[in-house]
Image (tube, rainbow, N blue to C red; front, side, top):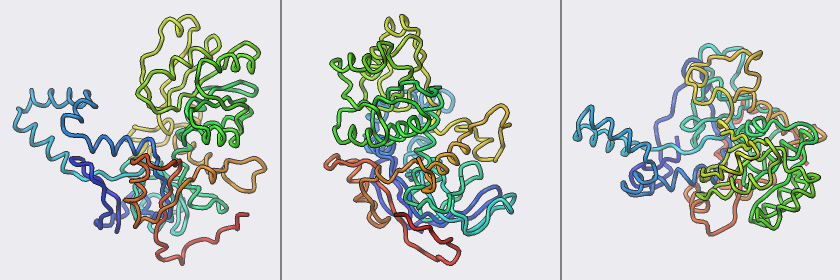
Length: 390
């Protein structure tokens, strides 16, 4: 089968023929139909892999600390060999995809069947690969009327949805979304679907235009000249919460958040930005900073993700799996008001053209947002009919 992999050492990308995975207990074997290149996250991964060894060390001092601790215990030679061996391992790319179940692992019979369409999540799991083996809690069934090329957004949707839940906004609240990339646009739509008023901020005019289409009441540049506009829109109060979905080394989003927030507002960090915040401004307003945990509860818990453990709904209502399901439910075309992600897709590439897709994402030579990879059809005999989308 074909899969996109990257060298950890050189950063070189390639579409390779690799051994096909096999189904195992508690998992599904899925033939991928569409996968999403998340420009922000995957560009960061690719850029890191392309750095020199010194550059990698400078970018990840936390890993350097672990290496030094290992050297103290196991010696420099053994540690060096371990680091080089790790760098020689190929890195699978991708974490948001959709496809057809072609085999059901032990323990999932009756819950899933061959031919089911599922969205799948997880770095190193929902890869840009023709076949993927995916644990139970990292998949969700796709409604019949949701195309694969939209369903592959479900993981990004879960990330945005969990950030929105962390904002704890209710009907009539005003929330600022800083950064109108994929996650920011999805957060805007979820907030508006929940009856929340949204003010979107970005420097790109095309993304501000898209934010308005996604439901934002106002779309502005995050500059001091627009602070007064925020207070006019909120009756002099300031926004009830801020979803920081920006991607920048600067801490400017935190500074801007402090300027537009009401007293005791929540600042939810879902993008990757600088983390130096103006202490005095945050203290005077008693602002709360929340770092959103990716897709939701269950993320980074190996018992939940790898071994299929469930959380009791009475205590944990919205797990990462539940967020995946809800994102897909909101995509259904039959809904009078729905999550339409089709406007987020700026480019589509066939899997065989994946290297050009990544050149677009990492090169910065052409404007892009959602970049979707499509896959060969394979055997369609178990594929359910699709409802026409007009």
